[in-house]
Image (cartoon, rainbow, N blue to C red; front, top):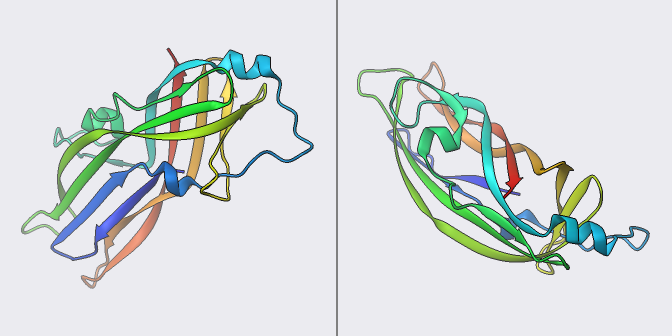
Length: 188
């Protein structure tokens, strides 16, 4: 799972670090009744590039006055985010970091100004099992699997509550709402 983590809930400076934390994704091994064909694992072999990272809400992070739900389009980040499958049962998950600073525009009640920085890809070794319709990434460190839906040359995961974003209420207080995300990797 990818977690977009708010670092500071201060009203004047809200700092969100959009960090893909594969380690927090939590994984488990396949159940005993699940069989995985070696051919299916070989079919998945190769590099899969992150080609879509869409939030459930739109933001104008890059300041072009055009809000978008695509973090890739808004930031230019995630171009080096990949999953590399070895064709056996090992994969390397590489996910870039994105740190975003949000500030309320002076004199505005709800307009935010963003600055951001793209970080380098962080490799996270995993094991995996592939079926015709899914790929499950697993780690001994975490109890839950990350299940990607497999369709042709794409892998997709939907994260209903990817991060919390700050929302200023009419009374000036700040609450945090969850925002979901959908990520798609395409085989290269």
